[in-house]
Length: 268
Figure 1 (tube, one colour):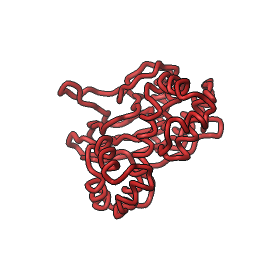
Figure 2: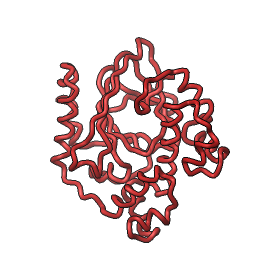
Figure 3: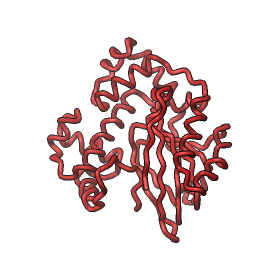
Figure 4: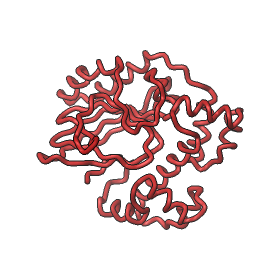
């Protein structure tokens, strides 16, 4: 089960959406893959726990933890039932939203007062009151003072409208700033460059289209998405997903997922 919830108008400059996912992985320890996209996620999890492999050993992750911008797929491990309440943020706002220093870590473990929400969320989850749980998180962020940088906001709008297929100088023009100033602010706010974020946005659009329409013509899709050619698309797709567009499309066709937005968790 996967549900997405729009943020209140006051949060739409910082948060893309809130989402809930409920999956039973069975009694055997199982890995699932999270493929990169153009967002950062604050993850609360409930059930059997969520683990990640570090130095060959599985390490338990606290609730919540942060998944920043990824430049390659990452694998998590769990078993039995795993339920998630998550906040999908724009990468240039997530660290300001939490009052944390930016970094480029894929999975970030942090200490923050937001962790106090876990027990209340657990109570709602136990009673299957998912909307109430999401509303609690919404209320928390509505009461959080976040100053949205107008330059980053304007740059973000430009990148989102173009699905990442936009040169850096045009992003700067849209934000009425120099490339140097905007790059510095992006680094400070997200730990990444505008080119990093744009590349992930563009990949995400291609990934979503192939997931919903696996029979898409790759050469045409490459040009539509702003890549030089199909070879350019294939290189970038493999870089972020670890597989080729054609193999990903075959997997999407085999999964026969209903017609809704791509869900990041793919069981191995």
